[in-house]
Amino acid sequence: MELCPSIKNILLLDSEGKRIAVKYYSDDWPTNSAKEAYEKAVFTKTQKTNARTEAEITMFENYIVVYKFVQDLHFFVTGGENENEMILATVLQGFFDAVGILLRGTVDKKEALENLDLILLCLDEIVDGGIILETDANVVAGKVANHSLDAGAPLSEQTITQALATAREHLTRSLLK
View 1 (cartoon, rainbow, N blue to C red):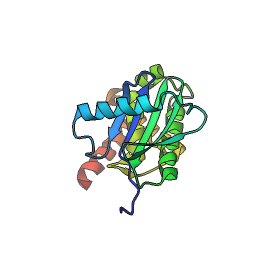
View 2 (tube, rainbow, N blue to C red):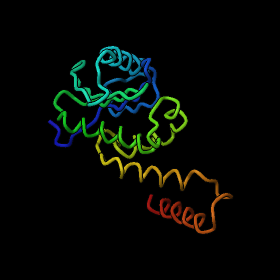
View 3 (cartoon, helix red, strand yellow):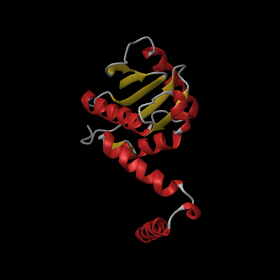
View 4 (cartoon, one colour):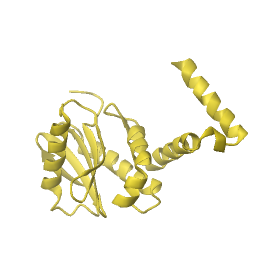
């Protein structure tokens, strides 16, 4: 038994079960077709439930899946069969709330696709390699906003101070590698 809780995957699917943003952190699904089959199966199993007000929990193929729906988006977090459901639910709620903050309350498929970069950064801030890093939505959204502000504007559109800060950050990263 592992001491540190781990996440198998985080899925964000649309109302038809198609991918918006997904991250897999284990080799339980070795091929892309296996991943797509899992997504389709978990979507089919959960689509008739009413997980709009609170997160729901289910066992599926020896995994614990915690999920929540809003508008035309379906959020899923999968963990191993021995994982703590409350920890998985906390990760789901952190992801759900951070996406809500980043999309300024308009959480739907159109906004999610237009801001896919922010959602993928959000996933990276919450979980790395299956290990949970952060679940506080405000902290996650703040880090993602900082990333998007720094990297979003080309150097020609940044002020001198911002350009120097960006250059300093890149230099520091290259020295620390």
